[in-house]
Length: 120
Image 1 (cartoon, rainbow, N blue to C red):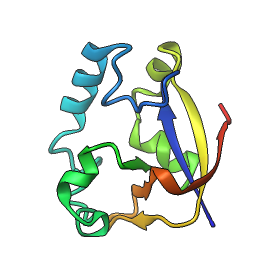
Image 2 (cartoon, helix red, strand yellow; image 1 turned 45 degrees about the vertical axis):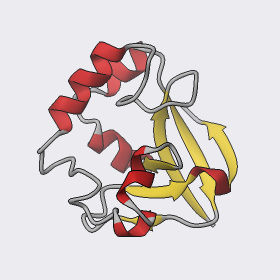
Image 3 (cartoon, rainbow, N blue to C red; image 1 turned 90 degrees about the horizontal axis):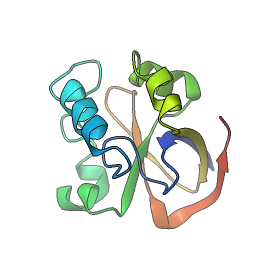
């Protein structure tokens, strides 16, 4: 079993796709696009792990980080804003996960998580 950490809104949606504050999600997504510090999942080698690239974006998979430290580093400069916007850090216990080439992110099948805990 593995632990994966992610920011989520009250609906369990990550900051890029949230409908609670779409402007912020779009802004954050643009800041992280083509940024070597936050590589796109396809560039970071996760497309093959997810059967088809379209599965990555269809909602079948969730992205996160292997530790809270990595998660906060991924969202460096935005952690306080995420907290102010009521995003929480969630820990998932999962049966399996696929790590990226960079080691900065991972992906798991959301249908196969064992436990979900809000920790911050």
